[in-house]
Image 1 (cartoon, rainbow, N blue to C red):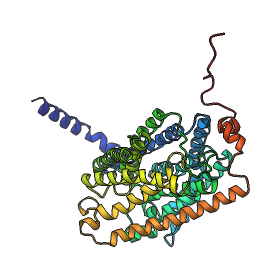
Image 2 (image 1 turned 45 degrees about the horizontal axis):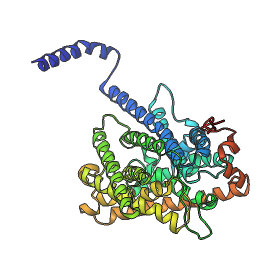
Image 3 (image 1 turned 90 degrees about the horizontal axis):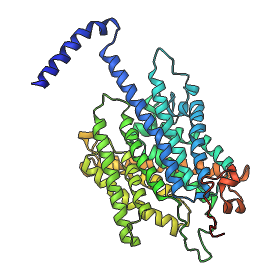
Image 4 (image 1 turned 180 degrees about the horizontal axis):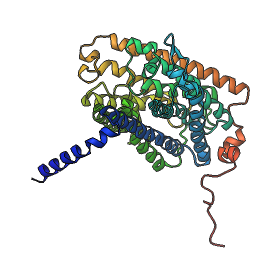
Length: 448
């Protein structure tokens, strides 16, 4: 009875207010635009908060003597990335296309005119936080031995050039452009390849050029564990990232009126949960213990893996994708560390590069027409969708890895890429910034 009375009251209120709506020229379309803008901004703010998550994960997985340096790199890659994306990156990524390869307009956000069309401003801030995500991924793989000045140069270039150009290939049509991968039918809804693999492959190039940390590989060439100083801090970072990922994936609809946001949130969550579980079990079997760092990276692996297909697959498929991603990340971390001898302190290459590639391919395998309009290989779509996904994965790998390889080589031969041995042993906090993250924590002899 109370429910009926409430409905009647709301109906009366709506009709009594209708003349006011009409007088203010508030239309249904305007209300939809307002909701979509508000949702996009909320999602952008959630993705921005992921910067805190990355900072916590990277700091927790590395040593205390480098924590200030980690924080500064995360602060500056967002600050410099925001400016670089505003000056150049947004235009290259979303401007009027030149052959589906690169945008040629919209630099300095010149296409956004207040009071005529405010939507571009909301879209810009949402894309800015994505660009910053791609840049910050590299920080973890190059942690504990990179010059701060060198990292500043890198942050600007990836946000302003490397990320936007490959992003145009897949997402240019979201604004003024039209990318060549997009025209092939490439599926990457929220950026397994566009964002995460770009960061992951750049991290691979940086780690190769930079070399391992001192003491990581002994004279016998065997890998030695260098433990992170604060696993609870890393765990907090993962939970922050998990939270932000709802904005990352569901927010990529850029529309509150697109009710698929609920389903996308579900597939995102299921993949993260199954990724954490699969990584824990895999580590338990392979390493003999349910390793916490592997489980945490497993959650991130599930999230990265589902980012491309999140809007195109069923909840069951999301669980399968997360499970596979969780297994892959464990073996990838071990392979890169022990076989390739590439030192990646936080597993960024495996989580973002390898699992980003897997997630993109998974979209061509598990997509279903009833969700995203296309059937993948496992649902009668043939090899066509998988082929397109492979083209996207390989082309973006070549672009991001080669460009980053060139960039880090140039930086190494000019301003220098790596700190001195003395500074690395002492810690980058003191050498690079003149600060300690945990100043005052000393052990005193109380017997005297």
